[in-house]
Length: 191
Image (cartoon, rainbow, N blue to C red):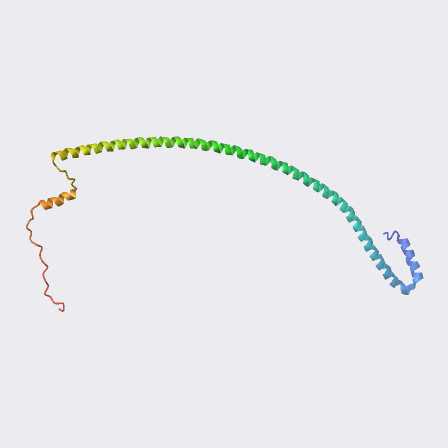
């Protein structure tokens, strides 16, 4: 063991000299003082050693933090380039999708326009045919009316129920006996 640069033999000589100089009465008191001094000295030297090591580590940490900052900057630049490339790719894709949708919308619009024209033509043709049919029927009815009017007859439209009513009016009344009257009851309520 090495204490303050002295070996066991040197420490033993110092203790013998201290015993002769101080005497056995004051030696324990001075031994305590020397122990406190050595303890405080060790605390100071260990604290100083720790500060020196922290300073050295701090320099190393600064170098490490500089390299970390440099790495971060490089990553930032790389991410910026990647983001620009991604944005460009997405813009190109969005543009192509937009163009596809526009062309599809034009095709659908043209198809709907043609379909609407066909439907319109079909409806107008059917309407003309129905108009012609109705006009022909109206002319026939007008002819029939004019023929009957010229003959001097008045044609009536008779509903089946009206025929029954007419038939009843034309029938001579039949003598039917009236229905029997209810017979009064002579029973008393108190019996």
